[in-house]
Length: 485
Figure 1 (cartoon, one colour):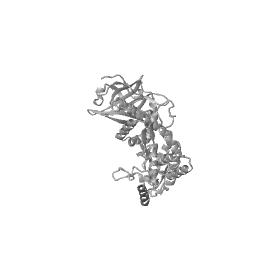
Figure 2 (figure 1 turned 120 degrees about the horizontal axis):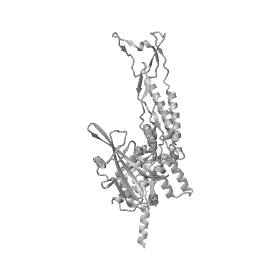
Figure 3 (figure 1 turned 90 degrees about the vertical axis):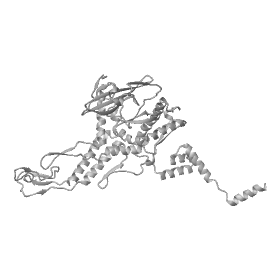
Figure 4 (figure 1 turned 90 degrees about the horizontal axis):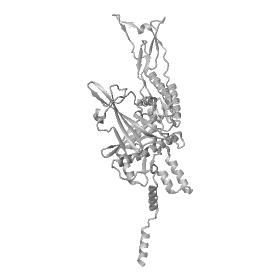
């Protein structure tokens, strides 16, 4: 069977360098991202413990979607200076992978769970990009700035008879001197909560063609790129893994969700409280059987023992506390904005429209803009490394034959449109040109967000259009003068 060892958790493997507590934290963040929480227990009219679904506002998902859209959108572009072959090849790879759209989508996961890895691989004669989410990415070794070795877990299931079998492939990426090494280990378990016993790769036909050990030459960096959100991991100061953008705001998210859940239940029940004699809640039919007249899923009617008149019913209802709930939710949202580095007023909640996201232009001096720039530093570096990794892999497979650029030659441009009032910008640069403080070329580059060569083309077009066109009379005079000579 090729058995060498047994694992309960992936972090039990001796090559993994991160404790299981870091993945407990990631799983808790995933719970907030998914908005899945335990049912709420309550006591109904008959004193029975019942359960109802917990209603979450799921601000965690709203938060990361908003941040991802501020960081990356369809207007993102890149260029590779003085290397047209590399520029064309990587643009083709990105286009084939629908990269910008997929990257923005997976970036939500990276922001929510504290990290995202991208793994280029060969599919036929094309480069594909796999996205490795935080729960299945395990660093082996790292330094203060980067993760150079890691394991990537892939989980599949098969059915044997009436039993489900769980398979885990661990793909180890490491270095042996200048050689890049990939080791594949396969584990099998009948318990979905355990990794299981190691098998030979041929034990599962999906992995039968994989080699257990491969050494590659001519690589300068790993065949994966790890991106983590900006900020230090204060939950584990020695961990190379990143933090979720809401890792330090989970208590606030819980307050928002709890308040919204209570608001939802109060509205659903009309939050009426009616005091009735207990005899009305415990009726017996003609056969002597106990009969429940009230809906067992509600807690509106409250039975009272004692001398209460059997015919009397007291309505103890109060008005639904909509204003108080809404004010509380908005106050917690303000705290969340502060904790996650967003400008005040980014989100708001009201009774008519529910949760709203601000759509107006955000100032370049705002907290949101500064937070965005901090995240973009990490994103740009990761994407630059991804470009180099793609080209090195393509070169090794004979798919690309040009030079491989340096990191500094790869420039990404992230659209700042949401942060820029175009009218204000146009006025500013027009006045700067008039005062002789900036060239027309630079102004065009800033206002129209174009590279230098395109700005020069636009300047030439303007010059061509501004040349006076001779009138018909001028042309006749010119022609006559030419004839006299």
